[in-house]
Length: 464
Image (cartoon, rainbow, N blue to C red; front, side, top):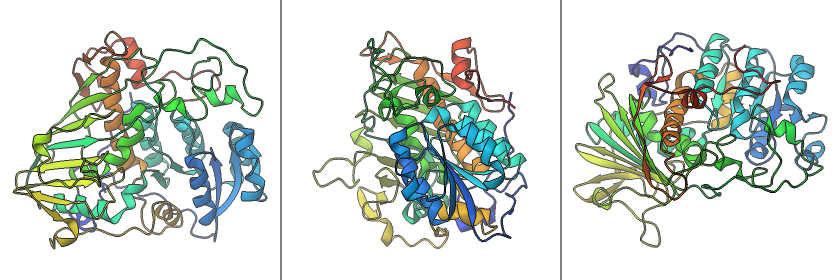
C-alpha cells in the first residue's frame, strides 16, 4: 500500500506568504529548464477544459504535440498549433515524442487522468492535470509520491487557488479573524448533467470521428453511447467523479487552504440512492477531521443536487439578485464569526466576507495585518514559472493537490457505501472509518477496495 507522505502543519514562513502548501518533506521540484527559453508542451485532451489548458500551454511555451480521441476536436489543431504532431493515443505520443517534451497537460475525462499523467511523470515530464486530479484515492497518492520522488513541477487545474480573494479568505481564517473553527459547510448546485440513471439498452454505432476504445482507456469495455461521450460521462462511476469530484476541488479549496482539511478519520453520506452505475441525484456528506497542530477537530458538511445548509446558520449572509443563497459556496463557522465565500471558485470579492453578530462585513473592509498572502501571476503561469525555476506552483501534487483530492474522493467512497435500494430511495450509509496512512477503510469488502484502488484494463499501467 502506498504510504502517506510526511505532511505536517503549516510552517510559519509558509503561512506568512499565505500560499497554503506544506514545506515539509524537504524536496522542492527540480528547476530543470532554466537553461532554455521555451517549454515544450504536449497536450493530452484538447476539447472542453483542454481547449483553455492547451491555449495556456501555447501562451507559456511551445505546443509540440496534441492528443485527443475525437477527430472533430483534433480538426482545428493544425491551425491552433502549427507544427504540432497529432495523436489519438497518449501512449504512442509519449513513446514517440518523449525526447521532445518537457511537460504535459492532462485534460481528459477523470478516469484517464492518472494513466496519462503517471506515464508522463515516469518519463520525467512535468505535469499540469485538471481537477479532480484522479478518479481514485490510490491514484492520487501514487501521483503525489511520484512527483515528489522525481522532483517534478506539478499543478492541478483548480484555478481558484490562484485567486486573491480566495487566498485572502484563507489567510483571514489562519490569522484568527473568526476565532477557532469547528464546522464548515460547502455546497454546489451540481450536477447539471444527468445522474441516477439506468444503463442504456440501445447500442448505436460509434461515430466515425470517435476512437471509442481509446476513450474507454483503463475502464472496462462497454458499448458506445452518447450518454457518455462527449459530456455526460461525469455522472457515471466508471468515468467521472460526480458532483463532488467535479466541484469540491473548487468550492472546498478555500477551506482546505485555511484549515488543512486532510486525512479525515470518518466520512458518512446520505444520498438519493444509486445503482452503482451513476452517482445519485443528490448527496449530503459529513466528514470528521481530527485536531491537527493548533487547529482543533473540524466537522465538514457537503451538499449537492440542490441541498443547502440549514437556514439557521445562514443569518447575515449575502444573497443573490433574487434574494436566494448563492448556488454554490462555503461557510466557515468560527467562535467569533463566520466567513462566507460564495461562488464556485471563492473569487466573488463583493459578497465574500465575515458575518459577525448577524452583520456582514465585506472582505475589502477587514484589516488584519496577520492575514498575509501572496498574489499569483496566474494559475498556469505559476506552473510554467516553476518549471523555469521561478517560485513554486501552489496546487502541486505532493503537498496540496494530493491531500485535497484524497479528501474529495473519500466523500465519493462514502457515497458508494450509501447506494441503498437504488435511485429514489433516500439512504444513510454506514460511516467509513478511514486510515489515511494505509489507504484502508475498516472492514472494506473487495468491491469497496476497488473504489479505493482501481484495476486497469490491459494496456494501461497503474503500478510501475
